[in-house]
Every structure is written in C-alpha cells, then in structure tokens.
Amino acid sequence: MSEREQELMEVISRVDGVTPGSGLKKHCKMASSPFVMLRGASSVFYQDLANLTFRLPEGIESWPLTMVMGDCHVSNFGFFSEEGSHGDNVIFAPNDFDDACIGHAGWDLLRYGVSLLLCADHCQGAIEGRYQLGEPIEKSKVICNSDSEQALTAFWQSYRATCQQLVEQEIDYQRVLQQFDDGHVLYKLEQKALKRQAGGEDFMSKSSLAKAVDLAIRPLAFLDLPEKFKAVDGATYRTIEKNFAPYVDDQILDIVERIGAGTGSVNMKRYYLLVGPEQVSQDELHLCHIVEVKKQRAAAPLFEYQDLSRINLLSPAHLTVNCQRRMQRNPDLVLDDVLWRKSHWLVRSRHHARVGIDPEDIACGKRALKGGFQAYATACGEALALAHARFDRRSKRFEAAVIKTPEETWQALETLQKEYAEQVMQDWQWLASVETPLTT
Image (cartoon, rainbow, N blue to C red; front, side, top):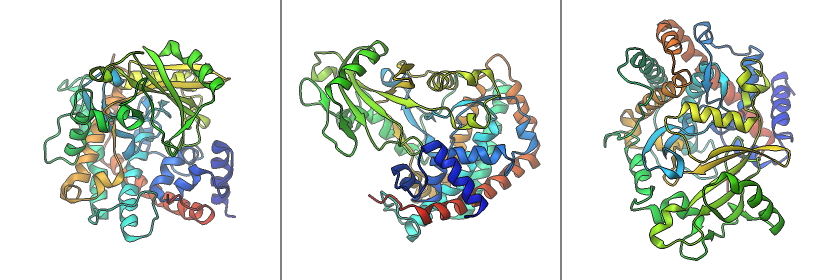
C-alpha cells in the first residue's frame, strides 16, 4: 500500500468507523465516481490542506475568517422555501450546513471548483460507461471539458462581483436568488419547487410531505417505504416523542427511522417526525410537515482546524444551527439542537418545496450545452458570496478583502482546483479497487 493509500485508509476509517473494503453503504456510494467520493470524503480534503499537500493561494488564505459551508459542492445548493415548512418564498441558496463552521472562505471556493470539474466528469463517465451509478443518467448530451473550465472562471468572477456590489451598496444582505428567466438552466427546477410548495399544483403529489406520508388516511402516517423508512419500536417511539416534542410546534403524529439518506452522512442515525394538528382536514394538510432529527458529528474541518475560533467549540448541532441562522436570510423556524443519548442531534424542517441539484440537471441536456453549466456556476458564486458575507453584517471587511485580491491569485485558485480534481480521481481509482460501487 502506498503512502497516499495508507492516508486515505486512516482518515476514512477514523470518520466512518470501518475501513474501505468492508462493504459500508457509504463507501459503496463513494466508489460510484470521483464526484461522489468527493462528497463523502470531506475529511480527506481538510487533511490535505492541513498537512500542506495542497495549499490555498496566500492572497485568499489571508482573508478574514467567516462562516463557511464546509462541504461546498454543486449538489449542496438548491431550491427551498425560506423559514422551512412555515414559509412559501422559494429561493436558490446553499442548503447543507452539516459541516459549517468558522473557517477560510477559500475552503468553500476550492471545494466547489473541484466539484464543478468532477460533476462534468461524473456525467461524461456515466454516459461513456466508465462509472456505474445507482441511478443511471438517461440523457445523451453532456458538456465538454472546456465548458467546465469556463465554469470555474464564471464561478469566482460572480463571487467577486457580488462582494463588489455589497461594498458599493448596490445590493444588501437581504438579497436572494429567485425568479430565473425561462432560458436559464435553473428555470425548470425553480418551477418544480414552486409547484411543490403549500398551495402549489403538485403539493399533494410531489412535496416532501406527499412523497413520505399517506395523505389519504386518518390519522396521517408515514408511507410503507422499506428502502427509506424503518419502523421504530414502541419504547423508542415514546422516548423520541418525549424528548423532541418541545422542539416542534404541533403534535407528533408519527415517527420513523430514515435510512440510506445522504452521502457524507449516510451512516449517521436520523429520524423523521410527522408533525401537525391532531385533527386535520384535506384543506389543512399544508399545516403538517416533516421534521428531521439527525445525529450530528463535528464539522469535517474541525479535526484539523479546531483552534481557528472559539465559536467552533460549540457542540456540533449548536454550531450547525448558528451557522445556518447566520448564513441564510430567513432561516428555518424549526431549527434547534438537542442533547439526547449522550449525542448531539440537529432538529430541522424538511421543506415542502425542496428541490436538490443532481449533476445531470446542470451538465447534461441542451440548456447545459448552451452555457447552462456556466450559468449555474455564476448563480452559486453569487449565493455563496452572500452566505459568507452575512456572517459579519457590521462591516464590509471580508468583502473588501475579496475584491482587492489580484487576478493572478484567482487564476492560481483555478490551477489548484484542477490539481485537486486530478488527485480525487486518483484516490477514487484506489477506492474503486477495494470497494464495490452501489448500483441499486
């Protein structure tokens, strides 16, 4: 085993508790493609930065610290309603804060750029038969490598331009991205989200509530979906109900264990609570919603960078809650942390209108080939800059540092993004040699 392979084995084993090759579902997912491996191995990314295997350009590393996503990639942005299931204003923004903390904004910039390159490779490889995915890509047209390289530039240019607009007060921290024009790669996805919100034409069939709950029976209950839900025994049900009822805004109508969700956190225990009025008519179903209770571990960067800020000393769930509240304009109204069974648990809404982004949504099809991939990178650049800048709303110090960064530093970032993408591809070849990809 090479030195690199030994490092991968040690870091992945430390986080997941078992070595690659043991058949852990998370590792099987990661073996599908380099893109999926990037998603599941964020701790490897931070070890590589901490031990200087790769290093951010000095001009970016010297920016003021801010709140960061921690696991920034193309599929951790999407559409959802502000204020969780209590709101009906659908926006496009970062949607995953499990690894959020105080850190270097350059972490998010580097990781996102790497994901752009690997997203294109993921789709190309699936169509060419190099990658065996759990859900095959049915589209035949995919962007080329020059499109992904152009997207790298579009991403940081949009990020920098947004910071410039904040400094010049052309926009403020209340700005959000929504109402994309009908030619944009995100238009159809936004329309899908709007139809799923309460009162939308697809609420009864496509919303998070409708896809998880039998809306035809009373009392309401979760659907029998063995691939997603596992029944909990009576004692566990009563314990969850007792411990988490104070953190939701209505009655807990049903509880199931959620299985097989996520990539980086696929092996973390989580439960779904169906919450709503005890008696509910067909016209009042929008008053019901799903609350996720998820066991939370420390943010991925903190094993290597625990001393950057005292804020990072908060419990894992508390830190996630604080970051999400600060980085979003109008955060989830059901968002809290609970100490239960000697672990920290994150409580949050499953938005009715939530629509995530898969690689094929942005890298395949006619819209992608007509500049859609670059347009997506531009949207993410703006959304990420707003999220980073909201941490310190008293000053524009962070934004000022960003816009003072010279062109050659941004170009150095692009070079680093390409180099790290190549590293992930090499790492994936090793993982795929010891683990069987999950194809069902």
